[in-house]
Image 1 (cartoon, rainbow, N blue to C red):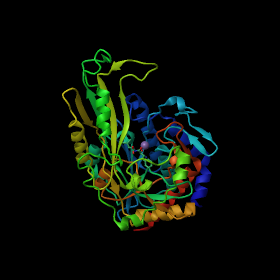
Image 2: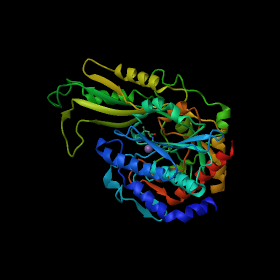
Image 3: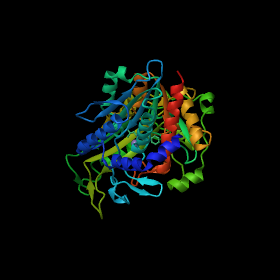
Image 4: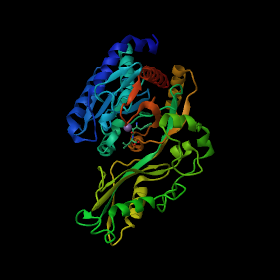
Length: 455
Ligand code: BES
Ligand code: MN
C-alpha cells in the first residue's frame, strides 16, 4: 500500500482528530491557559501511547514537555529525535478573526484556527505518520524519540534545565525539527539554518507622576522624547545598527555555503502578497540576504503617554519600548544582549532614567550540513511527493532552543516544514492546507523508512 493510500484510508478520522487537537487553547504566553495547555499535552500523550510509544511527561506540574520513545528497532538502527511544539501564540487582535480561533473551520482545503500551522498542523502530520507506520508494521523502521514542548512561543523557558538533566535520554543520530516553511506551495524545501534571537524591554522614567505639558513643558525632559531619541540612535540612515560591536562576530558566509542556497526573490510578488515593498533592513543588500544572512534590531512596540481620542496635554512619567534582535553566525546572544543594554543605558541623562532589561529565552543562530543522511532522506521524500527539486533555504525566524537541543543530543540537525508565508502564523485567521497535512504525512513516512534502511 502506498503512503498516499494509507493516508486516504484514514482521512476522515484524521480530520476530526486534527480538529480535537486545535480546540485546545494551548497558549503558553498567558498562565491563565495552563489547564488547557496541560489538557492539550495529555491529548498528545494519549495519541502517542496509541501509536507504539512509551511516553514520559517532564515538567508535568508546570508546562509539560512530552518525551516519547520507541527504540525497539535496536542498537544497530539509527535513532531520530523529532521536535515539535503544541503551544500556540495568543489570539489577539481577536476582532480580526473571521471565525473563532479555537473552533477550527474548514474552508475548502484551508483549515482556519490558531495553531493550524504553527505548530499543531506540522506536529499533527508527524503524529499521524508515526501512528500509521506503527499500525501497518507493528514496529518502526528505526529508533524514534519525540520531544514535543509547550513553551516554544514563550522562549522555551523550562527546557534548558530539562535538556541538561535528560541529555542521555535525548541522545540521537538525527534531530528533525518540523517547525519551518517552504518558499511557495509547489516548492518543497529543507532549511539549513535559522537566526538566533534576543529581546529587551527599555524603560525611560522621569517625574513621580504624569505632568501637565503646559505647566511643566520646557522644564522636564519628556521620557517619550528621550525614548524615541535613544531608539533612533540605534540605527543609521543606511539601516546599519550602531550598537558598538554589534557586527563584530558576524561571519561572512562562504561561497560554498551560499552555493546551496537559492536566493531568488520576486519583489513584486512579495509586495502583492504582503502589502508593502521589501525596503527594510540594511541598504545595498538583497531581501533574502537581509532576511537570512544579516542580523537585525527591530522595534516591536512603543508605549507611553496618551493614545486615545482627542487631545491630552500630558508629559508622561514613563515610556516603554520592546526590542528584539535576530542574530546570525557567530553572534552570541549573551554578548550581543550585553552590548545592546550597555549602549542603551549609556544614554542615561540627569533628567531621566534609562533601564534596559534583557529577556529570558534567547537562542543562538543555527547552521546545519546539507550533506547529512537526514537531509538526504527528507530531500528524496520531498521530491517524490512534490515532483520537484527540493530547495535549500535559510530562515529569518528562530526556534531559540534548537542550538541547545542539538548540542545535548549530539545529532545531525535538519529543519523541515511545509509552512507558507500566507499561513498567517501569529496573526488573525491562521490557516493550514489539508493537502499539506497529507503531503507532510507522506514525506515523514517515506523519510523515516529511508533512514531506517541505513544501518
Ligand atoms: N515556527 C516558528 C518559526 C518559523 C516561522 C520558522 C516561520 C519558519 C517560518 C516559531 O514557532 C516561532 O514563531 N518562533 C519565534 C520564537 C519566539 C516566539 C521566542 C520567532 O521566531 O519569533
Ligand atoms: Mn511560532
